Image (cartoon, rainbow over all chains, first blue to last red; front, side, top):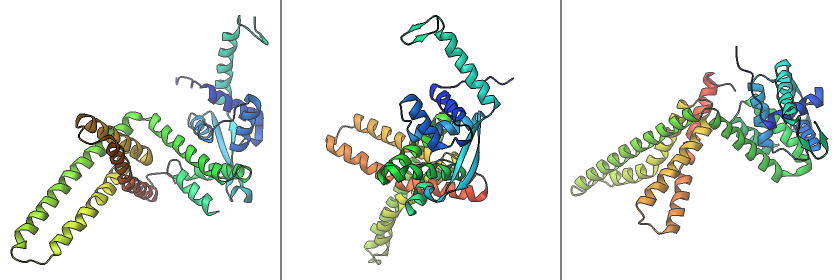
Length: 111
Length: 197
């Protein structure tokens, strides 16, 4: 049985952003969602390499939309998280939750 | 719109066309509010990140291919030097007999064209050794050449330091045909179906 793919911090951020956006998750909206939620604007290089890596790991899949004039006639590439991706992000978040249990952090109560 | 085509071509060198096209579309969409400077900065940062990912995915294969490229380059340089020496020997031998200056011209032409042809050939070899990672392997090859050059200069410190910097910059400029050869190789691989468009 193949080992479950491990997720880096930014990979988790991108997966969560795609999950939050639902059907409207493409490069621009994913970047905007991450900026809005984390206060940090992801660099385009980091964002697109992470999206490619997640797709190559089989955690997300993409479909092409229709080309639009404001994008120079280029289509949008919409992303969705598949079941494997959901399982991976849930597992990673549970690990964080377990680590947080018993920690006393300002503004958080996980004790 | 021409700039979009160029940006798509640049990204297409380090990823598949089906990924390059929507990525450029995303960047163009954001560039409408951020400007052309941001667009080109984003295109170059994205291209470098995608290329670096190819290096990180299989560093041994990429570095091995680049080292083989360095070996090919050294071999080609020796062949080139031998050919030039032979040509000048022939020129020197026949000058006493007042042979036309054709041989002199041939030697001068080869002196200029030889390194260009050799670099293009190295680029083709690199593209063949690392199909799908052509630009990444060229990048590692150039870095290796620079490191080798620096090591040589460190052990043979005959040149003053400003000349070192100029020499390294000149070396980098001379590697442009290597990238051209690699792009040519990638194009041929796409045409033959070895590589996804």
